[in-house]
Image 1 (cartoon, rainbow, N blue to C red):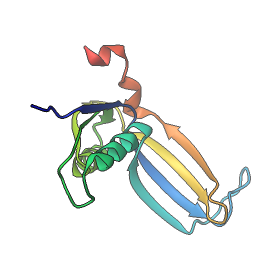
Image 2 (image 1 turned 45 degrees about the horizontal axis):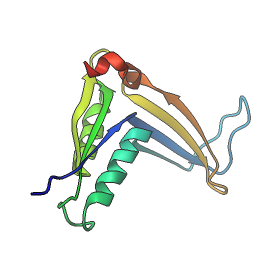
Image 3 (image 1 turned 180 degrees about the horizontal axis):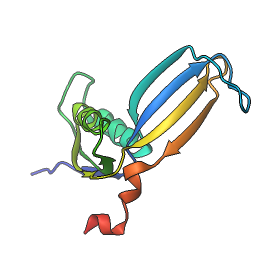
Length: 137
């Protein structure tokens, strides 16, 4: 009898706010960007999704050789439903993700220079900061 191994990822979940620009602005300068997008991210969430995708036998197959579980926190805001849904759509068990009332979901504001791919990232940890040792009791 074989058991399915479990991969548990403890980490951050963020909503990424990404702009692309021909060049990065200098201090005090305002530039018009060429695009804007939002996406699901956070180092922990990205690792969990990568593990779940690698554990599937093929891209179109939901059969997995490992159970992948995410532990972390999101806020009770407009970003929470999409982050949870995205984890689950990628085969990650999101039952370990807690919704922290009164907190905002972590965000990353990303500016990418199109020509070089160089970026600047500002992080607001939001509910991620609630993941402390007492979070597990």
